[in-house]
Amino acid sequence: MEPSHSHDSLKALDYSFIQQCMHCGFCLPTCPTYDATHQERNSPRGRIALMRGIADGRSNATAVFAEEMYFCLGCLACMTACPAGVDYALLFETARAEAEMSGVLDTPARTWTRELLLKQLFTRPRLLRLVGRSLRLYQASGLQSLARKTGLVNLLPRNLRNLERQTPSARSHFSHQLIKKIESPIGVTRYRVGLLTGCVQDIVFSDINRDTVDVLLANGCEVFTPGTQYCCGSLHSHNGEPETARTLARHNLDVFGPELQHLDAIITNAAGCGSHLKTYARLLSDDSKYCVRAVEWTTKLKDISEWLIQIGIRQPLKGSKFTVTYHEACHLCHGQKISNQPRMILRGIPGLKLIELPEATWCCGSAGIYNITQPEMSQKLLERKIKHIASTGASTVAVANPGCHLQIDFGARSRGLKLRVRHPVSILAEAYRAENAKTAR
Image 1 (tube, helix red, strand yellow):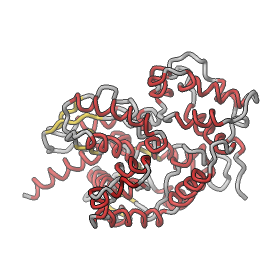
Image 2 (cartoon, one colour):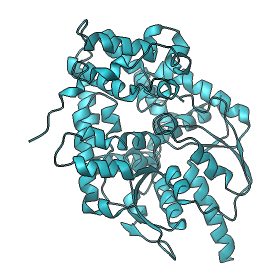
Image 3 (tube, one colour):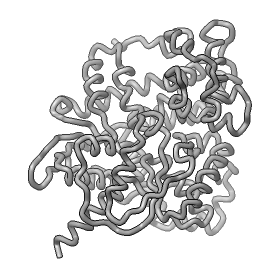
Image 4 (cartoon, one colour):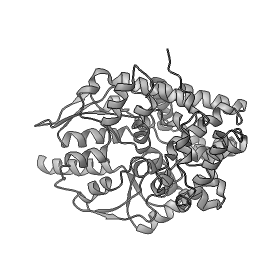
């Protein structure tokens, strides 16, 4: 029997979470939407006031309430600024679940789209890979280029035309084709870890997953990578589908199975996924079958940069001379409180010069699917981010989240900016390979 989760509504949520907000306003200057509009309701404090109205029974979920919750980026910068320690992440997810339960935004097209994407595509890894292969065929065959050159894409509605321009390039090989189930380091095995390959990460950035394995091997870690993994559920949890998020959490626990207890850590290289993956203990807290394993999972879940610094990273002996700046993905710095570790990795690479990025922790506008649902605000934030990146003069920007990676890469290309967008772990992997190549000669 499935456990009950009535606490997914604001009225059923422990009231202390809402009451904790002191209305001090420290969150205001850190909130990108408030900074853009200077409207109180577009701030974390204003949104919590709206949530409190529902929790108190003074108001019901309306279209205005729901639209405001989806206007929020969920960047969690307010949590870093908050002196009272308000758990805005939980409030934000509960508020969106409330909005979806109310049905105030429902239309046939919206309902169909959410069913197709959230309930079907992103809950079926093999179907997602099939879509990825179809996208790869469409792109590699030249059909995408032809459609753009002939103007066929201009026949699409404006919002779809804009979306088509941002279509990511699917990889020719996915993670299960690049990574063996178990890979062992040469020499002494110091640790045994599991690797999460993700969903979008698997289709678009399987090379980063391969780089992650190579870096772990170079640091004495044996890597266990299950072949078929599920979406972490962050997309669902952040879009008002908590029960689907729980289902996916159970699937991932089942995928790792008994192997979980033999692992020193479970590694993720995607900031947004990692922030959500660390909530499995809370997500499944009242599930008697999974709660104990969920606690173990949460305890062992580590971002790749967090893990490397924790175990004592092996500094590469060789690297290439180039300049890099580092964009802090919101759910890495604000969600997971990981900020210095990626910088420590980059600074330890010979030849690399790290240039600090102005407003490094300011959201780039990707925010999951925000660039699709709120394209105007997303573009404003992207313009701001690209302007700051260009001001550094760096040839490379390091980014530790797939959404940010795609957003910044698209922004740079659209503006004719020659910029290499790389995950910090890929830059480190390149340095390890450079020293191995020198040794081979």
